[in-house]
Image 1 (cartoon, helix red, strand yellow):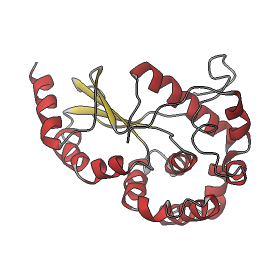
Image 2 (image 1 turned 30 degrees about the horizontal axis):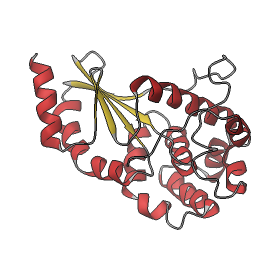
Image 3 (image 1 turned 90 degrees about the vertical axis):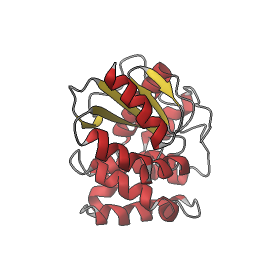
Image 4 (image 1 turned 120 degrees about the vertical axis):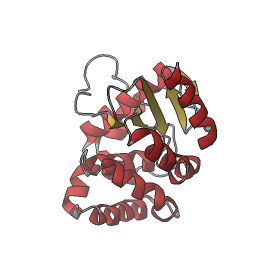
Length: 223
């Protein structure tokens, strides 16, 4: 999914102030008001300490893989339904690599989905990630904000969350601002402009097959 990463705008602070309920009332809006991080992200007004890095595998492994992905990206869905499963079995679960998953917010629905996944807690985060990708076409169908919000509530129930917990999670404006600030900082640092993108020991790569991924990892592990 090749979409330009938009930079900061003053409008974004207002957009995130009311969480998803504000966004759902704000019309189609598109990427511009949403994707722009937070106007004050650089001046210390946003507490980003609440945004955990989501990881799998061995934190002490010789090779670290960072994935940048959006929950609304079809190519990301395909990656997680195919290549990622083999990477997890052959590299992550055996502790050969440290895997870091970083969310990209190209649109408000991707942000809402990420907030829901985090609401499920660190222990259930990757299970929720898998569910969001498996059902991506269903919960994003139609593009109506109210319908998408209701679909996410249903997924929350599947993960054992109550509607009240999901509502509280998605309406957490401070959390939304912090997540976008962290995303914007990381994406700029790693020059991310498409999803899925990967940073393997500091080197950026675009989407690739398992065979290509495996060859790169094996080379780095042997060096």
